[in-house]
Image (cartoon, rainbow, N blue to C red; front, side, top):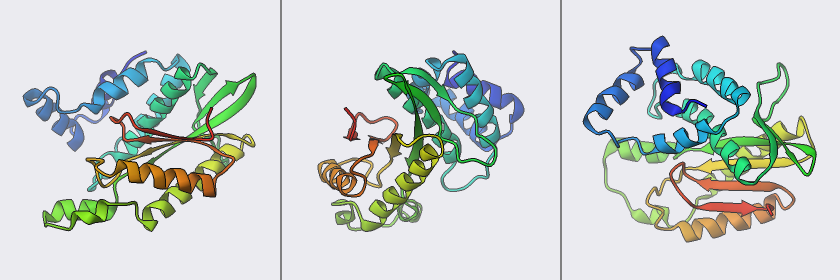
Length: 230
């Protein structure tokens, strides 16, 4: 299947003057390796089956022109994260994995697959850095690094609501499935990841004891927190 670069080339034909397209074109001409996440998406997109590629391509063309803000094209990249979950399911040797089109007037999970001959569903969610973190970065002001020592109640509340929404998507089709969450922490250096991992594991065990959840730390990262998954 085509990869990330081919997808962007298709989008560029329709939106040649888009600010992100222009910025990527200019940056790559000077710094070819300035987008390391491209390789991650490239690999994931190339293993999609043809139907799933069409689904993702159609959704991407609709999502890409979204309004510009301090989060850039986050909605577009959140959508591409469905391919990362697809790649994970492939690695688990599951069958009949397909990205799903939205069913009108019905909550729809992102991916369908089969496990032991039973149809199941996966919902993909992304939690990006907080608005507070973006504001601090924009202000370029110094601050106390102790704010990163542990995850805040606000973050855990966000994780809780995100998973609850994912469960609703899945249960509109099936009693059970997999929630695949990609988390981008404010502490991008992950200096306190061990604490984060413990907090999230304890939270999932307490709040979602019977649910299968994968928490992937960033697009580029290799850290995974697996809950209820064999």
